[in-house]
Image (cartoon, rainbow, N blue to C red; front, side, top):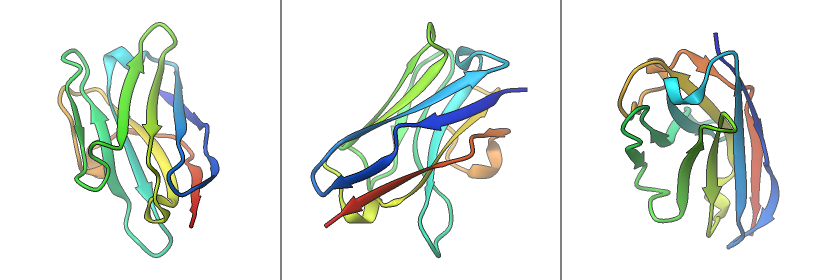
Length: 124
């Protein structure tokens, strides 16, 4: 079992930055491939970024590529998502997810463990 807790969300103006954290307990993030997803009101949950266990390979959705950065600190058992150049369309609840497989998995159904989600609101 892996428990995931997100933090770092909030309200920010267009063009601003935030750093989301996903703290894991129960198992280590190094044993899992990790993903960040988001869900805006009335929309389906969508893949944002992922980082593979073992290889550390990362991947991003086209909508956030070059603006967001996913990283992992194994010593702190935490995964981060740095959000830069934020836009109003980035407003959503952001979720951290984990799976004990290698690779960057883009489907929400591929993940076994989820955090409770955290709100990010970008004002125009």
